[in-house]
Amino acid sequence: MKTLAELEEFMTRPSEELVNDLKQLDGDILILGVGGKMGPTLAKMTKRAIDLAGLDKKVIGASRFSSGSLKEELEASGIETIVVDLLDDEQLQNMPDVKNIIFMAGNKFGTSGNEHFTWAMNAYLPGRIAEKFKNSRIVAFSSGNIYPLTNVVNGNCSEETAPSPIGEYAQSCLGRERVLSNFSYSNNTPMLLFRLNYAIDMRYGVLLEIAKHVIEERSIDLTMGSVNVIWQGDANEYAVRSLLHCDTPPKILNVTGPETISVRWLAKEFGTRFNKTPLFENEEEETALLNNASKAHQLFGYPKVTLQQMIDMTAEWLLNDGEMYDKPTHFQERKGEF
Image (cartoon, rainbow, N blue to C red):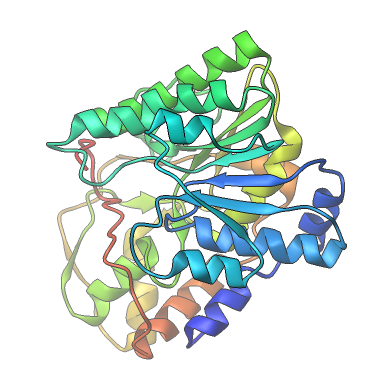
């Protein structure tokens, strides 16, 4: 994995299972917040799957498209675009009614000092979306951050674990879920709440951050000693296939990889690939943010990209000076301050 073209082709390559599921799904697909980190590849994968299936189905991406060339890039891939500020109610109400909604818009980083905007995006806007698209099915991205830190040895949070969000970002994510659930009950709107952590792309993510620390010989904080990760392409596929599993009241689904991964072990794996000795600070706490995604794996199968593949691709990407986003995950954060 050395070039953006290779990365895009691999990440947007649809599986046979996705193609078959889309054959069972009626209606077009509207992606709200397509301009985020995951939205562009999710849209392109969906369009490729629709084309392979020979379906007459649109993929529509909605975003502010305030900078860059993403709008033109998506349109070149056959994806229709809508320029919209979702917080502007007039613009929202003027959007077309579409049968299938993937709701990705939200705010995380920059919450501290700007809490009002995070709550508007993560808890107020979902109610407006649910009212506008009450006759649709809605897959809404949420976060594993709504769960408490759990014991690394005998923990991991399932969908039955009671939420206990730490910090305003996580609290607003639970607010999103509660507001959407209210409208699912009152309007009989089928929904699925997609509790994700952490998606991996070559250009950002937990693995890249650990690898960069190793190759640059910077110390790694071990306080959050374990993590879950999933390849972004697999997470995107799960999201689209989840449209067939929306329900009233909303179905809840944890989405991540099957492993509980030691941060220390990850650093040593990268150290072997870079011929570097990782540097560490602090010791592992007994708890970490860990999710059990076995229900998602039962529905969709295990992620197709393995942890060792992700480690190898990340190392190769770094060694070849691959493009990176300046969007750290802050996965070490234990106090919920983003």
